Structure formats: C-alpha cells, structure tokens
Image 1: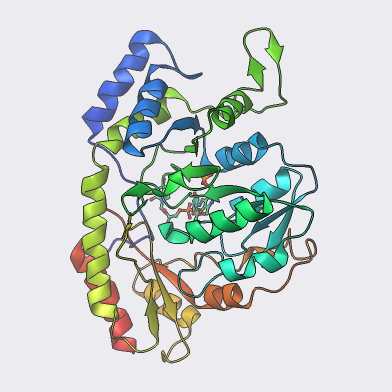
Image 2: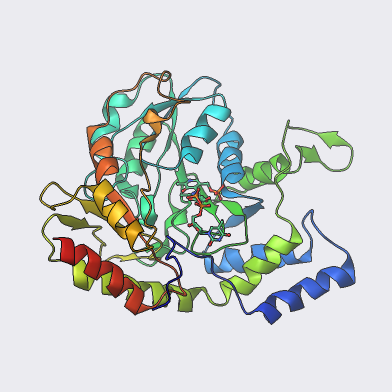
Length: 370
Ligand code: T4K
C-alpha cells in the first residue's frame, strides 16, 4: 500500500477527455453561465435520473437550501424544527432566512430526527420542519409527512447526503414539499461545487429559479429580492460527465463498506450504521460509533488512525448547538442522544478510488486495538 495519507474522501472525477470534450463546447458557443446549454442538459438528465418532477440547479447546496426555505415564504421569526446533528449549513440556512431553529433530538437508530419528539416541540409559531437525511439514511418520511399534514407544516428536507437514495424504489426526494441536494466535491455526485432544489410543485421551482437569478422576472422586472447562485457551465459539464459513472462508483463504495463491515461487525464496543432492506443506499459515508466498551475513546481512535496516516473525520462533532455562533442563542431543549452520538462518531475514509486493501488496513487497526 502507498504511504500517501488516506483522506476521509476524494472527489469522483470522470475521464479527463470526457470533461474536456464537454468544455470544448463552451469555447465554441461562448456560453459560460446563466442557464446555458450544459446547464439545461444536466437539469434534464438529473430530472430523469432522480425521477424528479422539477429541479432547479444551484451553485452549491447551501444556497439551494436557503432558496428552498425562501420559496415557501414562511412568516419571519416563525419556528422551524430541525436537528443539531448536522453540518452547520442546515441551521445557517434557517437562521439566515430570518427563522428560528428549534432543535429536536435524533434517534439512536439512524441519527435522524426522532419523530416521537417532534410533536412536543410544535407551537402556534411553528411553520416548517427541516429534517436531514444524515449519511444518506432516509428519515422516517411517512411519520414526518403525517405530523406535518396534521399541523399544516411545510417539510423541506436537507438531502445533501442522499443523492440517488431510494425507498422502496422511489427517490427519497419524492417526500416532503421540497428537498435540497448537495453536489459538492466531497459528495457522492459532484459538479465541483453545486446543488439543487427538487419539488413536485412547479411554483416552488419557479420561485427557486427566480431567487438564484436576483429575483428577476423577464428582462424588466424583479419580483423578489433574490441572490446570485446560478450553476455555471463548467460545473454542469462536470455533472454530466460524472453522472455516467455514478452507478459504477456507488458499486465500488458498496464493496468497500462490505469490507469494513466484515471486519468490524463483531468488534465489541464498535456500533455500525444500520441499513434497511427497503432502502437503496448510496454508500456516501461509513460512520462508526466508538462505545464505552471499546478500550480506546473516540479521540484516541482518531489519534491512532492519524498515526497511521488515516484521516478519519468526526462528522458531526460538536453538535450545532455547541458552535460559538449558536451556543448563547436559540434556547433549546437538550438533545442528549445527538450529544452522545457526536462524542462517539467517527467517519472512516470512503471514496471510489480507494481499494479494498486500504479498508482492510483501517479495519485491522481498529480490530487490533479491541
Ligand atoms: N447540509 C449538510 C447536511 C451538509 O453535510 C452540507 C455539506 C450542506 C448542507 C451544504 O452543502 P454544500 O453547500 O457544501 O454543497 C465538507 C464539505 O465542504 C461540505 O460540502 C459537507 N457538507 C461537509 C460535511 O463536509 P469539510 O470542511 O469537511 O471539507 P474538507 O475541505 O475538509 O474536505 C474533506 C476531505 O476531502 C479532505 O480530507 C480532502 C478531500 N478533498 C476535498 C476537496 C474539497 C479533496 O481531496 N479534494 C477536494 O477538492 O466540509
């Protein structure tokens, strides 16, 4: 095995010539951004790939999430139920939209929002729920839908990790009023930076399309105070080239996950992520929990891996309510499960150019310490 550092992830890249032949077209037509032909081609391909009704491509996932929230015109200051076990982007998008996040704890089964705890957080100020499909594992979408319908709440999924995930053969983005996807370099499908809003409601996608283009309506009016968050042609070209290889790359990741699981499933003190039979996973992340029964703490495991040039990551530690920008605001009920998981979690390296021997090397380090 090479002595190069083993990073948490490496971006998927298509064959160089396939990217450059798409880029060649940009030189021919001099169309660089603002819904160019490659942008339109990618939007059409993704609509089909994701069985989406409507899609709006974005320059990154975060802006797409802000746009999705903005599109519903939720009352300023209203409360949005979300979880603290996520990347900062989820909470930032809520707060930057002038809304108040209310933190719900997560389930220890899948690290997603605990649907049994949503009800007690609903008040007459609640306008929406923003759950996260953490690591690409779908939330309990049926129960979330039932609660939202009963209380007349919008559901906007942060599906940043869930590209290509299906529940009983249906895309995870079919649930909720809208979903945001991330196409960042570190994600399963990338457009370098990128993202999308998906919805079955054309009005929401029209609003997202206007929002990313300054709120412009035709050439002579601005109907919304929008932003600039359009996906450019170089990003779209990367997406078109990458999409062709996605299934093959997910298959590689699946084998690597199998390798990890084979080595780690019987190690006392290590808990693995459960995957459901009815879910088609994208194998985006391989999180493990280092429990008290393991001889080393999570941080000691992390250090041990680093000594071996293996750079695992603590996605997500600390929880959002522990960040300096949030800890003194948004009084929230405590989230003991999220806090506990966050102190134990370690995501192991996983990417499509990694080989099985590398997964075995990492698994063996963890087995030896047990
Ligand atoms: N919601 C959720 C739940 C999210 O997780 C995210 C993003 C968002 C919303 C927002 O979506 P975007 O606006 O990002 O589309 C990374 C990503 O930057 C971020 O996209 C992601 N979540 C978050 C969980 O992870 P970092 O700070 O950990 O990335 P970084 O730079 O440390 O990269 C990780 C590893 O990947 C490095 O070890 C090196 C490798 N790498 C990275 C890049 C960018 C490469 O080899 N090549 C590269 O080009 O945040």
